Length: 208
Image (cartoon, rainbow, N blue to C red; front, side, top):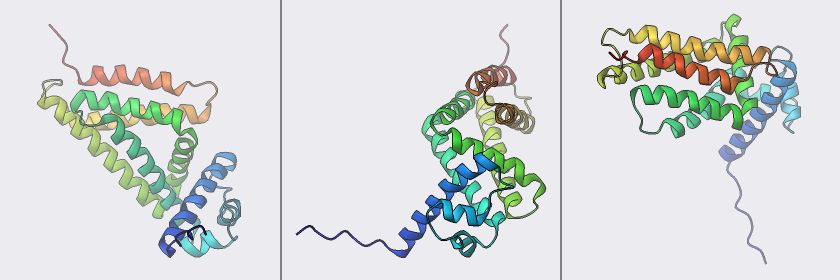
């Protein structure tokens, strides 16, 4: 007689249903946009009851804030895997390479994540707070990379870490925004390659 399958705990079942609802929400957001995606639709599309998402999260904004966190964690895993133990200028370039990899491996997640980013701008709620934390974290990362580049002699001592971090985010987010508007016309991977050249120029000390 085959050994009975180990029964999952309540926490494991909840984690699985959350994952299923997040996956369903990603597809609905891509198809309809965040505004027309409802908690009822998410629960049904995930194969659960129409009220599960509302029961667990209460409001759509709370659910979307959790989804933003879930998608950001997925992106951070790709980033950490790609940059490894690199530092300074190398990390800046590899971070963009990580995004190029993510465009290929998880384009739906990337589209949904940035759709939620832009949707949350006018929603002063849990979503806005989640997004602000993520943006602050990304700017701190870029500032650290600039600091390392200066320490290694790859950038001017006078380089403003804050300005570099702002320009880094502006370049990357701007490239993704253009891709979101017209993914058939904008080749994001190629555009990000151009961003690498711009970022090198911002950091590197001219020879001679």
